Image (cartoon, rainbow, N blue to C red; front, top):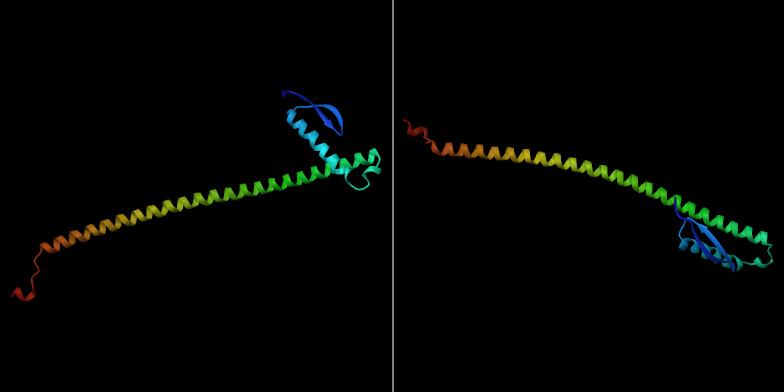
Length: 142
C-alpha cells in the first residue's frame, strides 16, 4: 500500500493540513492552483457582491469547466494515438509486403543471372567447338 503524505498548505490566506497518496510537491501544486483560480475569479466583475455560496458555485463551475476541457483534450489525444497506432500497423504490414516482394524479385534476378551464365557458357562451348572444326568450302571438295 502506498504511503500517505501530509502537507501544510496556504489556500485563500488560511493554512490547511492536507494529505493524500500523491507527493507533497503535488499537494502544494494543487494548493497553488486553487489560489491562482481564486485570484483569477476574484477579478471578475461583481465578484465582491456575490454570496459565499455563489462564489463557491462559481469556483466549482470553473473547476468543472477545466476538468471537462482537459478530459476532452485527453480523449482527442487518445483518439489521435489510436489513429497513429493503426497507421503504424498498416505501415508495418506494407513493410513486410515490400520485403517479401524484394525477396521474390531477388530470387527472380538470381534465376535470370544463372540462366544467363549457363547460356554464356553454352555459347562459349559452341564457339570453341566451331573454331576447332574446319570449314570446307563446297568448291574445295571437288
